[in-house]
Image (tube, rainbow, N blue to C red; front, top):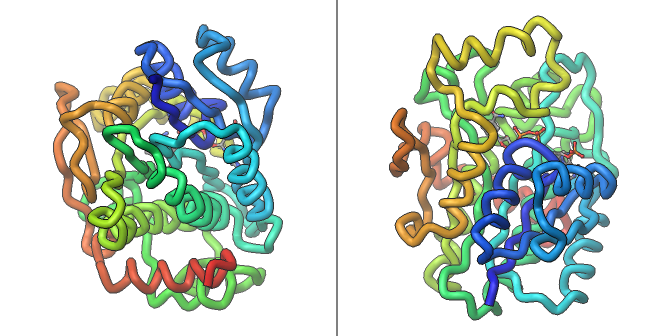
Length: 314
Ligand code: NDP
């Protein structure tokens, strides 16, 4: 049978390119878990996906209620779940003030981390039930959260501190950052990506042996053309792609990045659990090192426990 892969945020950028790459193999049915039906449907058509290769289902990660609803709706379709890709993200580098999810969490961490945290915890049961030979859960990471890299050292740097802001609910105008510091949209995104990478490793430690599920994260390269940078100032949007292409040489096209993520979904050579995958300049994959904070097992455990409380699992 075909594998079934759920991809969050498959309506643009990396998620869409991955959905396309998987559909093209003829071996996958993709559930495009998106907040905007019309956009998702239009996007699938625009890249030439055929109707039998995908289903659009509603998921708004900025609402925990919507996450639970999505899980119920998915279960009602009675399809197996073979791979979950947590890909969606928001990035608000120029925001002066925090904005908030339906439950009142700062939007970047609320969407990118807490929404996916609840989704992955609930769907782990479904993954476990699947009889697919290689079941995988992938949470897209980023170099920008990794302070052991050049890109990760561009200020403001990711830093979760002692998680005091998160523990207090990320809900106030003055307590919207995980470390309890002042709101900074670019940092909130980077922090959320560190959470994604810590969560993947904690899932691996807690559940890999028991469930046989492969947990992985990745940095697909700098996909400088995606919607992620939509809120950035126009000059940045103009100069960022050529800067990445010719200066840092970290640039990848959406198509190439989609192929990379599709490898993490289905390539037998990338089946190892607990790995943060990256690709070198000739596009071969390797197991990359995470920064000290993004691989801190103590912090991962604490993040897990605090997040469980916030999403209502503990
Ligand atoms: P895009 O902005 O193109 O795609 C983000 C996707 O997330 C969109 O489909 C968007 O939906 C969706 N999304 C946002 N908020 C929600 C929500 N509340 N509920 C459901 N879906 C939501 O960005 P990219 O493709 O670049 O980003 C994809 C992933 O890649 C992210 O995890 C990002 O951190 C990561 N990444 C990107 C890099 C890059 O250089 N671009 C580098 C490293 C990692 P909609 O279409 O409705 O807006």
